[in-house]
Image 1 (cartoon, rainbow, N blue to C red):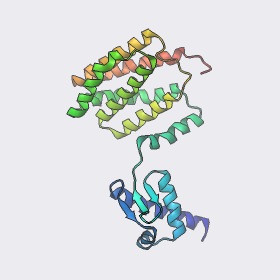
Image 2 (cartoon, rainbow, N blue to C red):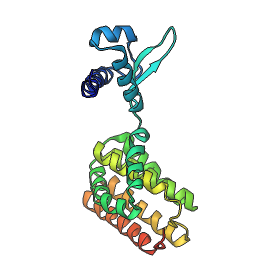
Image 3 (cartoon, rainbow, N blue to C red):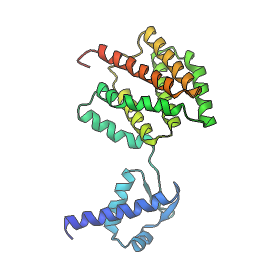
Image 4 (cartoon, one colour):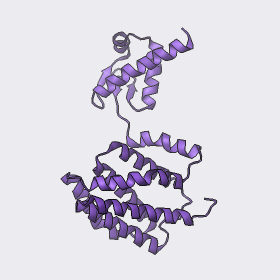
Length: 231
């Protein structure tokens, strides 16, 4: 079989096996190897290559032994995000680049979050607002910024926005040279903006929520501008 034919067979197997996994619940048994070979009509080497690809994508788990076989799996957010964050870094992207690309998304997330009516999510945001003043150290403010961004993205109901926001924060957390939140004044400004965003979202005021997110973006841009050019 030619290399092209082999790739075509493996790609077909990946598609068939991925469809099975996605049609099942996480952890469901998809079948033993011999069963899948017969049902999918593919060779053993092709199935094993396809399984390796889907294991790397966290869509299939392969277990050995008497109770082994193929099982449905689902990727976690961190599994999906690791690759694009690495891609950005390898291609010379900076935090400023990522911020410029995601600030409009963050602003839209704030506006969409204000329309959220889910009582559980709104309760979590209310509890977050009550905890803001307790975050006085740089580390606690950074953790709060990340937690708020994730919660707002969840409240937005937009999975694409949630993904891009998570990529941005994952990339930023790895930039250890940044000097954000080091002064008491910076931390106070960050907490004030967190409160403003929470209040607007809890009041279902999309326009004010968008404005507060714009101010958060402007604050980050201000901090980025004062960072040493060498990074």
